[in-house]
Amino acid sequence: MNKYLKWGLILLFVIVNVTIFIVVAGMRSPEVAGIRRSPEVAGMRRSPEVAGMRRSPEVAGMRSPEVAGIRRSPEVAGMRPPEVAGMRRSPEVAGMRPPEVAGMRPPEVAGMRPPEVAGMRSPEVAGMRSPEVAGMRRSPEVAGMRGSPEVAGMRPPEVAGIRLPEVAGMRSPKMHRAILAPQPARNLCPYRTSTQNITPLNNTKHLLVSAYLDNRVKDWDLRIIGIFRRDSILPLHCFFCCRSYFSNHSTLASIEQHTDNFGFPFVTTDVMCQIPVGCDATHVTLSIHPDSMEAHQQMFLPIGNQESSGTEERRPQFNFTVCISNLFGDYNNVLQFTQALEMYRLLGVDRVVVYKTSCGPDLDRLLHSYSQEGLVEIVPWPIDKHLQPSRGWLYTEHGGDLHYFGQLTTLNECIYRYMDRSRYVLLNDIDEIIVPYNQRSLMPLMNELQQQHPKAGVFLIENHIFPKHHFEPSAKFHMPQWEGVPGVNILEHIYREEPNRRIVWHPYKMIVQPRMVEQTSVHSVLKNFGNTFKVPPDVCRIVHVRVALQRRLTKEQLHIDSRLWDFHDKLIPNVDKALRRIGMIS
Image (tube, one colour):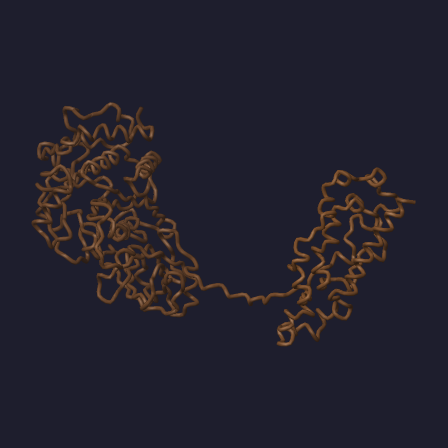
């Protein structure tokens, strides 16, 4: 009997409190509950009459002055009577779960959620937080009840698992924030950036290579280096990305083919662009139409030499950079190229740039080894994926689309690539070494030449052939450890041809100040801003070990030139170290 009396008292307590909530609270009656989505009200959310109602005591969770103040009134704030406050930890209550209650979930109660209660979220209760209830949260009668012995462990069937329908939904009416309309995505630029060194220009037969700021030519701001088909030149328009946005304003380009094409259908071409006023250009593309929609379909090129746009003159990162144009086929002359690289290092060269289409496997390993240590930059040059490049220099003899795998294009590209980064650029082939004969390195040579010829920006160095079939008889520098390494040992070839000066044309290679060159060919520049000086061969010459040019000359008719032997004490151990690094010698 006592057990059922306890259950009855608890149930009566819950019913009384819920009844108070229903009677007093800001009820959501059926008429109110439904009004939320009624068509008449759906659009009313922002009307002045409703917008202002959000804070009215009758609507917004009804916190009337009498109730709002009650939370902090001295009579209520913190009020927990001693007989209640102390009850939480009283020994009589602390552990009290009477045996008859502890495990009790009688069969008739277990899981009991009467149908009229289960799922019941009556409209009168949903969302209800009346002022009297809001203030009741901390009332002494309720606050202290949490630990009362009658309640502590007891979960009567009606309360067990209780989310009583009348209480479960007791929340203040939901206030809806304004939802901002979605903003259109910003017109970011570039849309597509080329990461390749050769980029086809859509809707044309042309190829784009790179773009660089260049304000040295009046009325123009930027130069795009490309490979254009000579019989398909059409007007082009320049489009820019201005730091982060696309400039709808295009500028008409100036297209200039280089004069050296050697009869091939494709030629190195410069496209000059004006940058629109106010545009901080970072990327550029070309289009045959002035319409910007067509330009969106093109690949954008990043613009190099951004430092050139400033007026402050910067000190170059390097003093000397060697540009070696076009490595192709299965060329695998490892020994000679290793010797050339180590000679350049001894002469003061900071960087060697190699444009590589393909090469032999051993040379490929060597290149990557030097690339990892920073001496060599490998520029991938997949010209054979776009054209049928020629292995020769003259179209009528060798055919193909383009001279020597694009040699002229890569030489020009290398000049602009290092225009702001290197004080001097050397333009020569992979088996050629520009060697000073009166100084131990290139810097004192160039200091002397610049002092004598301050307006010169191009220095022509005469090419001298050392036939590789003539060997030095003593075999002084025949190194046994190099016998298994593919390639030529240049230290064994000291017999030099004297150039035939009776012919009008004689090959030179060059040392240039890159900012004083606009266009170059293989043996001379096409356009430059300063003077050109031919360096006497007794001051500096090219050591070029290769097949004889004048094959009728005997060894006795050749000149002995052992200049490279002056570097043997450092050259040989450095070559050994490089070959050992790639496993070519033990």
